[in-house]
Length: 191
Image (cartoon, rainbow, N blue to C red; front, side, top):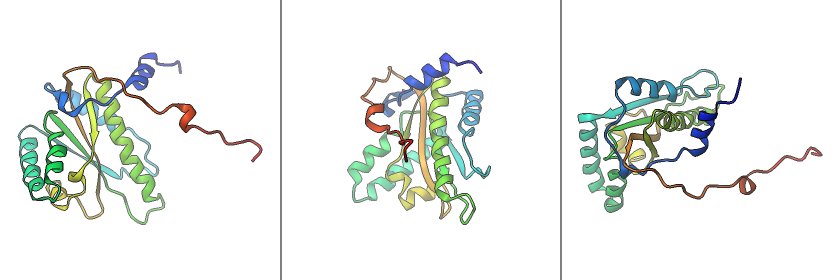
């Protein structure tokens, strides 16, 4: 298989867009279906599909955000919670990636949860490939019991991330990244 230079460039340069700079238009129905198909194409040891997606857009997103704002005001960290919830507002689309591990399975729960993380990353890459900006967020709303109830999460389910998608109002600035010489080591053959 020959190298796909466009894919290499996309993966080498993909950046998360600032949540406040994501706006309309968002993906249309066909683009959303394609984005979800890309998101689901992940390593999944045992073919368990130990995750599910909750798509939130339009009026449903407005109602969800209003309810999150109410919950944020009841929290001890209300000022910080307000700021975190505000990051979800500008983008027209939110996809909640829910880790739904199957307990006591031969595939360890850790591997199942990593697969949910891979879904989140594939959604980011898919959004970039489709020409959209995206960001993978978590925050208090991923852990707060009242916020979890809004999503009808099961007791063993966890929010792996909320991937927000829209059109970036401006290009995302590059930031310093980890360098290979900082984080890569090689196992010695003389082990």
